[in-house]
Image (tube, rainbow over all chains, first blue to last red; front, side, top):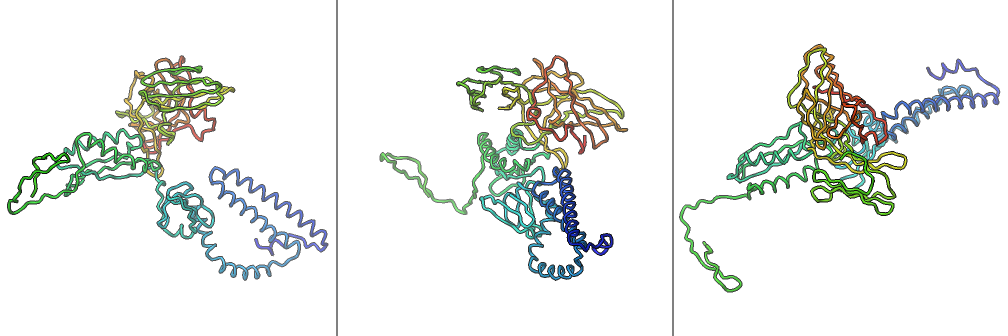
Length: 291
Length: 237
């Protein structure tokens, strides 16, 4: 229904006093209706939307109703021709459109981000190679606190068009260790020890089950892969803690993580001779081999 | 161990020593395990009684979920339209509460002697992280140690038209009603099977035995309205 159609139902008031009274009544009714609708929206959406976005929606709705009422009812009462406003509005719209192209782009991206919700406040994310916690999501920009504590404002257009990795969107997250043991060590025993350690960790999920197996026979070690699932909120603390516990427990059980080593075979036997060295007390320390 | 204590007092159970000392108007709460201090709190201007009782087993080591998944060691089969009562065990978590002048209770400490594990029930994006507990399936009341395990009297109702194999029960802590006696503690729950992928679990407000006392649950003392008290098992039985 356009304003011309509405005008047909509104009698033209020639008396300025009557016009003012009518405008006041329409404004009053509009405000009452606007308030009623916003209260209704607030009550019905307060559990479904976060507070900030709900406030934006309520304000847009409220002022939208008032704007529509001014254009649709008050202008016809005041006998203002809205068609001329449309032309002026069109020209103004083009100017504003060019001037605020990026703002509108960010605004629309912000609206789509709110609908799609790939990130939430508090999530740990990587947006355009910026890692951190989402502090705030506004209509125009998204605020990130990086892991080293920096404040970072990202325009919503960037957020929307770039790759987003949300580290806590799913409930569980897997991490992996590669643990090398000596060829002389018993890999089955090492696997059993690692499985026992995982079993004692509360946050190592039972399902999906952890995996511990010999992955490959490396140059210097037998490599055991350890894959553990943890709740997404706990995985990092667990990952930090568990590797050292595994290393210490393996060593306690006589299984060692070997250093890189290389066995050299010489074509001819080497001429070696045994010499003695002297300690601080000038006493002989026998049996030091020198090549 | 599960009782109301008037400070000052000391109780010792299973290598755990709980001491509450009076210092003027204040209380000092200490919990030691194997001689090592685990918790020490200063309760300012407080002379309330201390209540120690079992709480919902989903609070330790930190509040991560409100769901307990009891994994059956052997599956239980139930005929279509049938109803059967079985018994499971659940881990015990112990809550220490202090009462204020108006009789309200606030939790000051929680601990457990049971093994703590978590698991994922359902899909990675829509499932649930649950406290995990593996239990045998009993047809009679099991013998349990009150400090380690309680029992769940689970009434399984198969509303579907197929024979159903039940391998787990997902229970919501918001609905748990724990009752305890001198030697045992238990909960009464029901599981209504709708189809192979969907079941609903709920708790009864009645004790398994009339002699049992109602426990002060953590979720009750927190005084907020739960969103839902039922456990919906929508990712299989």
